[in-house]
Amino acid sequence: MSTRFTHRNLPRLLLQAREAVMAHARPSLRAQGLSDQQWRVLRVLGEHGTVETGTVAREAFILGPSLTGVLTRMERDGLIRRERDSADQRRTVVQATAKGRKLVDQLSGAIEAHYTKMETSLGKQKLAQLYELLDHLIALEQT
Image 1 (cartoon, rainbow, N blue to C red):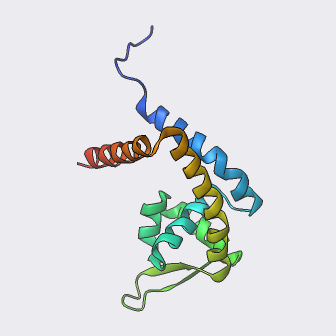
Image 2 (image 1 turned 180 degrees about the vertical axis):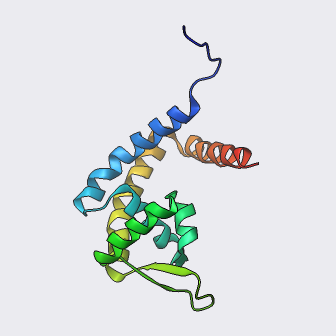
Image 3 (image 1 turned 45 degrees about the horizontal axis):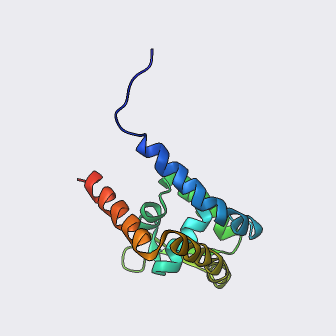
């Protein structure tokens, strides 16, 4: 028995698109000894500076228990520093160390070059439209 679906499998397509894009970044990440999750954490910290761990979890799409392990390894490797929030001792904040910021700077060049290549292939308008559609879909599904 097979079930007929009217629409294509959007979650699978989004995962395939993610994997296609990440296939270009992974060799650079692995050359620096980083996992996808570690890169997502560094990217969040590179964009926002010092961030509360809950925000890192949400922005990097890493569940809390997994994030604890990721941050422990990154702290061990000298990529991040964790400390209690001076305004609220119950909270922990994370920031990239100089070594972590250097990795973000090194890797961002290769990643931005790939985005530029995608922009050239798709065209600025289509890439902007893709971003807009994804933003709209995310907003739609969060309501």
